[in-house]
Image (cartoon, rainbow, N blue to C red; front, top):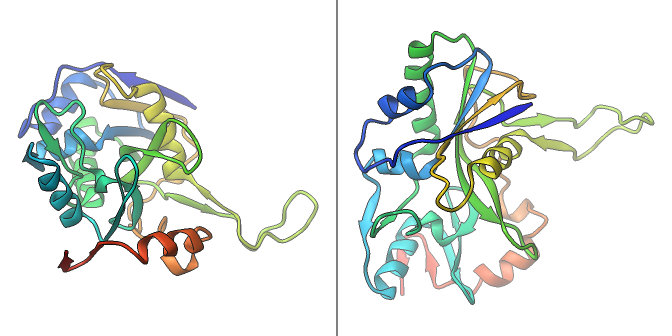
Amino acid sequence: MNVQPIKTSVFHEKQDLIAFITKHVPKLKNDSVLVVTSKIVALAEGRTAPLGSTKDKEKLIRSESEQGVKTKYTWLTVARGMLMASAGVDESNADGEYVLLPKDSYRSAAELRKKLKQHYRTRNLGVLIVDSRTFPLRAGAAGMAVGYAGFKGVRDYRGTPDIFGRVLQMSRANIADGLASAGVLVMGEGKERQPLAVIENAPVEFAERVSKKELQIPLDDDMYHPFLKKSFGKSRRTKGKRK
């Protein structure tokens, strides 16, 4: 698998994203996966908010999340079925404003893919919209898929034998987040100015339709539920209520 970051000019709010991508990626091979940071997708959609006070930011985070709890450094939230910091509200590399997540990253990925397939005249093309995340008890950030189109995000091994013939009961490979981590690793987290990456020879199954829920696990079924329940059970934020 080859992962190539793409150096670009600075992307500005409401700029034409298709024109930006095709300018900086003049050619794209068939069977490629294009990785795009959620930040430039959100900027293209005008998903921003003016900087404000700490209370203003907290109100914005609560409005963008289903659940949330204040931690030592930030808010831990559930937003769009994902556990993340501050519901994706970010002010880094944002030129004096908050940048939110795209309104519907799966729809955005599908729309980008449709237009880019026509432009590049490809049969198979994946589009992966990524953000950064942290892991419990681990330092540093890695990539997370917030939306994708054109390939299956999960490879299911359940019901198949392992190398000794034991039937696997739980094993599934998270393809989307794996590719997101590879993309974000080479794109960088600072001033690299590489909001795009191209992945070739990725171990993916291309598909015309994907399920936006295939990566999600209900909170009650998640292995981290005992810890999350203790935190979110005391949360100050639930959908439709603010305190």
